[in-house]
Length: 373
Image (tube, rainbow, N blue to C red; front, side, top):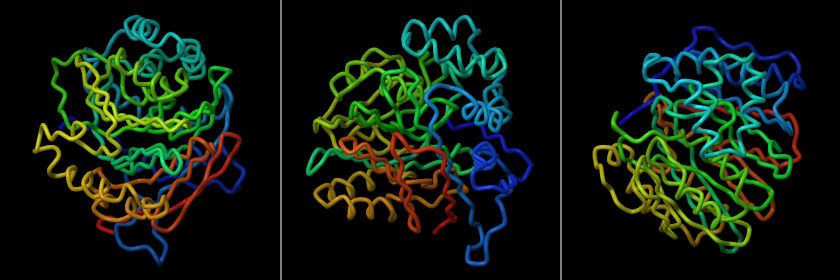
């Protein structure tokens, strides 16, 4: 399996003195430290603190710039980890963005400027031909009794931004979701009522695979340009992607779909409600799906599809759907519940919840995760 080349800073993050210091909280929450902050007396050995920061910024500005400054040293090291020859030129990367996602080009220019016009950052921000990485994750979409998307995000806590961002980059569509790679999204929804999330699709990507975009920018693009599931599915059919993923879609009208995408392959659109870490319902690579209990998680969630939303969330918060392999880089960092008709996002952990809406400004929450618990 292709996994993220990990880069860890040796500097321990220092929490801001003031609760309203949004820039400080972003920097604190996003400091990728090799050592976790000290655990309180109630925390078990091996516990790690997760700090989530929320902000609202209509167009890229100081808040995004604080995110960039806090994370860029680690992102830069990862982006360059395979050497310059593995990367596209800036001209190639920009051309790919203009060809496939022209609606995002002006925002990309703004971000590149806020990065200090760093040519390496500008290349990475296109997310074209990025280094490869893999995540776990489980997700469910359903229409009744209300449109709903619930997902677990399974990854390494040291390599996670921990940011919920509300933006209006297009000037006509608000987008709320969980940030990744500085302006991509792991999951999110827009004010048209479309919600989107992703899971790794379980098909390893070879060095000879067709070039494509990292999936977080694809999620951003769907939410910036599409109003419903039908539009999003059509868009996924034409976008080149860098790795295999299952993309879950649901809209406020009650339509839903799961779309399998992979480099150089036609997208497969299905009405499947539950996806984990193999291609829709087909395990192509048991060596990938087996260690992640991908089939077991899918079957369990399928058996709980008719449960009310609270019970379904509880299923996501328990093993085997919830993973505690944080040392292995595949622990559940959060459960996200999107209600696109209501316009609400609620994050869940076994000991905490945190809700966000399009209009919510700065905020933060801390919780703890523990290996094997």
